[in-house]
Length: 323
Image (cartoon, rainbow, N blue to C red):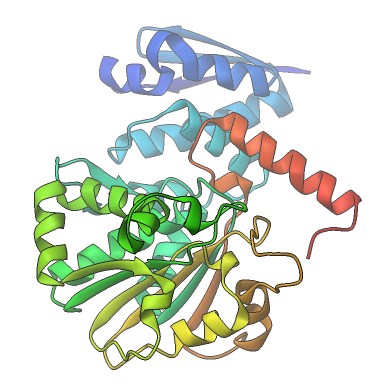
């Protein structure tokens, strides 16, 4: 049984945002939902069978709600809304994704791109220790740095400490040129990049010179107690249980700690157990500690990356490799 419904747009600008450049958003919608869309001026006509028309209408209305709250749609964002509506998870999405949490040094607004990111930001705002666990491209490290910079600007903390274990995909530091700092800098580069985006190069370098921001390999954390600090441990899947305990026990008064990593990408030598895998069982259920798990749906990169992650997850599950 067929159905026709109409959605009315407010103006040409709203129509352009909704449809996308060269109607790319429209093509994405019609590829995933078997309903036809015809746009006549500021009127959108949807035709097809009842179920598909109702699904298309729900997606378009959610997208319009986001547009009317100031959201600039992207192909990735449209695909995400499609997936959430299909799963019945769209409730509160427009409000969650419209909230500006910060701006870059060039004035670009920073917002959560997915509901998973929005819940992660909520956890960061309300817990002293947060674990962000999930695949690459979900924004777990970048958003942690965003919250650290905001805490510094509001004087909630006096210092930001960013660290990573210097273990990467089988490479060894001894083969890299330069002194120790030059050897570890490539491993810390994503942290520098996030700070440059948020503060600009000059401000970041000035903070580093003053010691307000410290970027160092994990080994440098031993024996310290960090008060009034925002601590971030990145790539934590490559920590040993002993290193994880060492980092978490650096937490001083007035401090926050964020631990990020992907437990499917452990690069530790054979026979070494990941501290990020172990800590989930040890600290589970302790008040003021939050574990947030990202999924492929939270990946903000090329939509093909989501499909790659899902394919690997499926292969690992079939082989019994998922923990």
